[in-house]
Picture 1 (cartoon, rainbow, N blue to C red):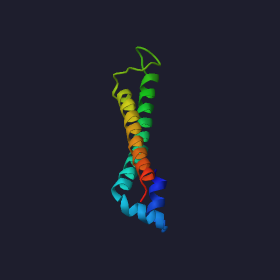
Picture 2: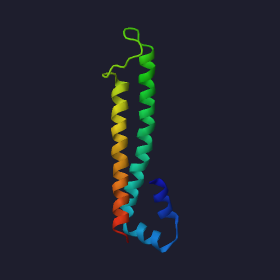
Picture 3: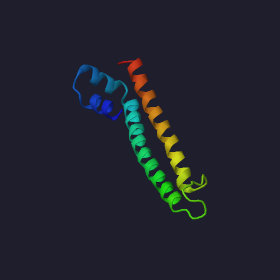
Picture 4: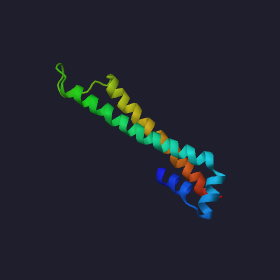
Length: 101
């Protein structure tokens, strides 16, 4: 999605110029959502890593997760936020493709 945004913003072709001028807000929404997808993916990774460390060092029940840990809850939350952000980017791109300038 970021590559599409960059291509449409930087290309000097008539198609890219018309599309960028007709849908500037939609293009920026697509790019922001795509950047958020990358951020949420990283935060999901960090949260999962934290949860794994806690599970490996757990004394009462070794090598198991506690679904109420903040790290475990954050992992799930960032997964769904990542999915939602990717969905927003996809919807924006579909709209731009289905209703060209």
